[in-house]
Image 1 (cartoon, rainbow, N blue to C red):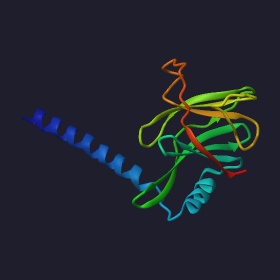
Image 2 (tube, rainbow, N blue to C red):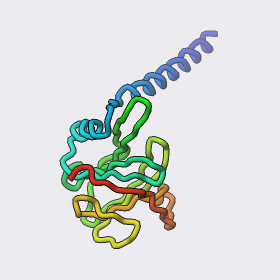
Image 3 (cartoon, rainbow, N blue to C red):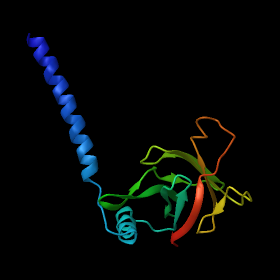
Image 4 (cartoon, rainbow, N blue to C red):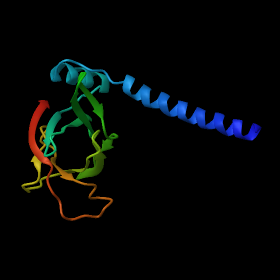
Length: 163
């Protein structure tokens, strides 16, 4: 009987930790009434020193391609929900090499993409990043880990937000 009670207590503790972590993640999101206010808060909070381009994907998601500082880049997402707007980082910092970099990412709606940064690429799937240093492409799926060569562009529209 004591063993069953102990198991029950462990299960309750695991469930409680799950709910606490799920709720605390939601509580850390600051909502704002406008895109501009949201982006300004995000720029200050992330201490962004470089350029930012806003890519609208073919799934109508708003991804922020960000030059954090120098050769450090990351991707964030701008979201509108019933409480207003918020922005959140969806990738880690990536240090660019002299020729570029690529990495996979997931949006908050669980869509999978791969982003490519290359130098001097003349390809219809690439657009020039606003700082002029790299050409970028965003494609559907995790093409690196899946070793896929059939690339479908996920870029619908691009706007320079900060230069």
